[in-house]
Image 1 (cartoon, helix red, strand yellow):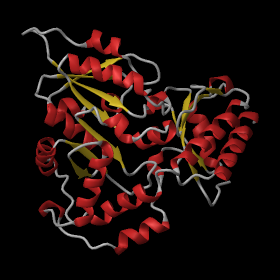
Image 2 (cartoon, rainbow, N blue to C red):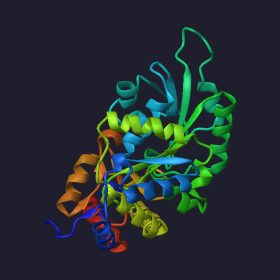
Image 3 (cartoon, rainbow, N blue to C red):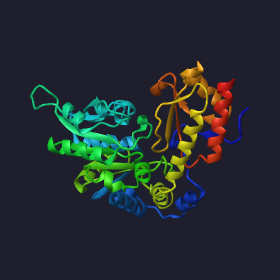
Image 4 (cartoon, rainbow, N blue to C red):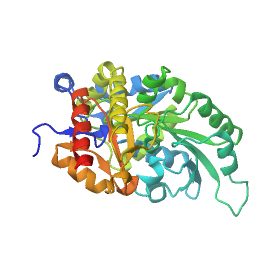
Length: 350
């Protein structure tokens, strides 16, 4: 039986604008953003630049575009960037660094999507006319495939120090940066400040319908705007979308703690079910991975059975044949968590 109300834990990208956000979006005046005539876009960019400790920012259609534009501005064709081997840039952007910027990506190992300074130092290539040049290091905060793990500030500072000593450029994929800030009690600027470029996503936990904001120096953003235009990312009267971001920053940041609490409640419930095993015992933010091998069924089979009960999760594919991911967000209540746990209990018992 399908439920009338879906419990959608597939991703926090499934979050939808709240009624208050929708009303605010429809109340604003808009203009042509390409001519700097949309005050909402200008205000959003100024606000995010300040939030991340940067001089300027640009509003872009997606977080992937934020990453890809940053790499293309910072790097030259043939350069190499260093990321964790599970980073979004490496595994979820369809080879964009190579296709769009001619950049090679080198993945390094680490725990839960996090690598340390020593690992970075060993991955930096020596100067040689025969080798690609290591140009940039990127950090993903939080680490998605690491179960939403928050980079410890000390580890990040160590990576920053090694990168600076080697003359490397630093970029932060801040898709869930505000989750990290809320979970740790630190500010977004504490994390993003030392980086040459950084961005945050509006369409995940913040509940906006679309978009990310990329920040850096004024010179960097000037070049980023060129690529935004070239790659077809200019959005004309995008003030409606920017207004959603402004509303989210005013109303949806501190409430991310609710998502984190719900994720921990989900993990606790799953851990008590036979045949299920949490991939990561510590739930830092809003992402829960669990393995279903003990049920004798595949992730795909479990996910399909959940869908029949009105619960949506992601499984198989990138995660592995017996691994499922569940992500909490503002569209998921504590009651929904109870429904998801009950659905899984029925499935594993059956």
